[in-house]
Image 1 (cartoon, rainbow, N blue to C red):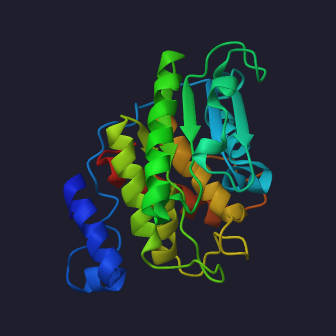
Image 2: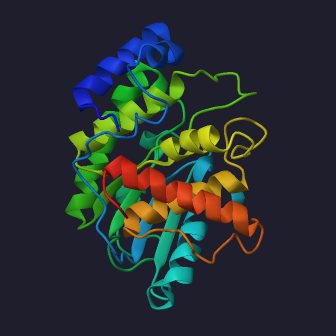
Length: 278
C-alpha cells in the first residue's frame, strides 16, 4: 500500500490542481485508492461507547431521514443497552458552510435538549469549501475556533469529510475529491480532530461497484445508499467497531446483499485510512 506524508499530499494536490487527477495516476504519483492511506494523528478508540453526539452540518446530513438517525440505529442494532442511552442531536442549515452555525448556542448544556455536555461534536463543511483558497482558509479558522469551544465544554472533535459532486452537477471535476480529502486531513491533523472518511468511502465505492447509485439525481446530495454508507463509515470511526454484519438496513429499505457490501466497504476504508483494523 502506498503512503504519503501530509506534505506530500499537499504537493500532490498542487500537481492534481495543475494537471488533473488522471495525469497524477498515470505518472504513478497516486493510485485511485492510495489517497486514504494518510497518517492521521487522531485515531478511533476500539469499542468506544459515546452516548451524546452533536452533528453540525447541512443537507448532506439531513437527507434520507438524517445521518444521525442511521448512525443511532446501527448502534442500537449492535448494542441495545448502549443504544438506549444515546442522545444524538443534529443541527443543520441547508447550503451552510461551517461558519454559519452558532456553536456556542449549540454547546450550552440544556439549550437544545441535552442536559450534559456532548462527548463528540461532528462538524461538516459545505461541499464547496475545499474548492477555493479563501473558503478553505475560512473553514480552517472556523474549525480551529470551534474545536477550542468543544474542548472547553469537555467534548472531542470530529470532522466529517464530504463526498464529491458527480454528474449532472455543474461543478463536477475529477480534482474535487483530492482537494476535499486534502483539506479535511490537513485541518484534522492541525486541530487534532478525528477525521471521518466518508468522501473516501464514496470514491472507493464507485471504483469497486460502478453501478451503485450513492448520489441523489442532482449529483450533490446523498441518496439513501449514500447516507447508509456514510452512516456505516461514521459508526466505524466514532465507535471503533466494524459495521459488517449489522442487522440494520434502513428499516429494510436496503437489500441485505447491498447493505453487506456497503458495510464491508466502510470497514475496509476506515481500516486502511487509519492503518488499523476496526
